[in-house]
Amino acid sequence: MNLSTVLSLAAVLFKSYFRASRPGYRSPFSNPRVVILVDVVLFTASFGLISYLLPSLPSDLTILLQPVVAQAIVGLPVILTSAVILAGILFELGQTSGLASSEAVNWLPVTPQEYVIGSSVSVCFAYSLFPALAFGLTIPLALRFGMSSVIPFFVLISLLSFLWGAVIVETLRAVMNRISTSVYKRSGRFGVVLRLALLVTLLVAVQIAFNPYILYAVLSSIVSGINLAWFVPMVWPSVVVLSLLLSDNTRAAVFVLLSAVFTFLILESAAWLRVRYWSPMAVTISVSTSTVYTPKERSFLWLDSVSFSLASKELKSLSRRKDMARFLAIPIMLVIVTILPIITSGEDSQTALSGVSLLLLSEASIILPIMLSSVSIGQEGRSITNIYMLPISAEELIKGKLFHAWIISGVAVFGIAVLMQILAPVSPLQFLVTLVAIAFIVVTEGYIGLGAGSRHPDFTIGPRARYVTFTGFIIAFALGLAVTATTLLPLILYFTGFFTILIGGSISILLTIMSTIVVGMALLILARSYCKRGVEKFLSNMEV
Image (cartoon, rainbow, N blue to C red; front, side, top):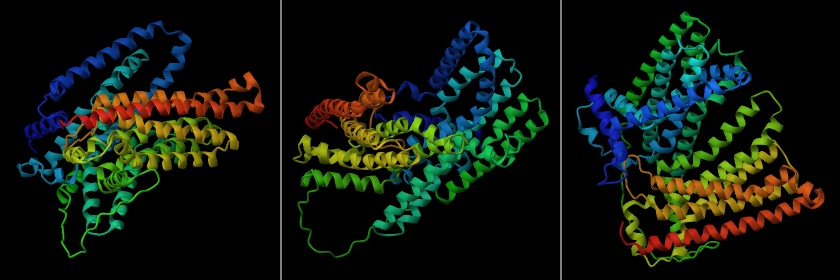
């Protein structure tokens, strides 16, 4: 392996992360030196802030903080691995098959090992803010509580765990290519549905396997503590840190060696998969005789023929493009990651679930409709010119683009609501007002996402296509958080007993329902106006 080749390849891939999103524009962050400088500034600022605040803490709080710091240092390696995998699932696995089969690197004298390491290093650079901030927060705390001898090993083993996450993302790329290759050999809709189901299952399974809470919950049910965790490679870095804190240098050395062996194994596995499934198999097109095509005007629910055609195209795009599978995996990951640790905690799960059910519903009703609607314009890519050439109105475009976002989000969120009602039941009227609130949220968030996506689209087709600019992403989620909090405010006031104290318990639930409907309708009207103005401006701008 040539180290200079690896570093050069990592630098090229890292620069493409920023330059591919905006052709002709050179982002200052495309230079690795600038990113390193930002990491240093972030580390120094967080380190200085914590160091400044620590002496002013009361002694009682300082005593309570010490075990929390020890747990944070032990758990940080696994958390970093999980963070990189989650970021990779959401942002790195969007590479289309056409790009995968036409990358210039395929024609360069680069070995699979060099490519895997170089690509993993580029991913580490792209998300290097995670460890920089984590180290800036934990190192001064460790120094304060007499853990200075552990810090060098803690930093090194945490960086190794960070690299594990990037390598696993590379492995996922190859496995997804394999799934695409296998399923494309099957024709018909069954093959498309099978591939989508396999990809969603793969993404969810990997995220669950490296989720720190689930991981430690499973371990605690098998063994008492982490002393017998030798059979779980994901926690070996944490075992190293724990052994050093307990001054067990022999066990720490053993697990350092095991971690190094595991690093070699996952690198070789990723390289082998990259060789075997370097790119998806090219699609073979066969032409056969057919009847003369006759255009059909179809409609469905509130969709006219034009909106129905757009909605059908969006649904087909969602099911056939493997980079869209990550959006379908989001609600499943939210449910499992939230519910499973509570169920396996051994405590009163029903009480705990009732406390997080509203939070879980809020997360799902924000993330899913906004992500699906905000990318619906940008994912058109260069074919957006077809939209401009069509005699389509803003209303028809809105209906066609939001249909799949509303249907998928509605099914997912209402499914979560029913599941939470089974696990932690509330009164029928409380459940009804919850359904009313999340219905308003899903529809309103769809309008907000499309409004932001039409104002800030990203039509770039590249290895890491975003479909919406970072500014649009921030605006959509900021507005989404505000809308969700405002819509749920009457329900929160009811749960806290404010309405009961104000008017009595008999009609407080009716006041909650009426307040939710009034607030939801007002926000829905505002969001629809925001969306319509953005789409009209988008259709009037002929520059792509």
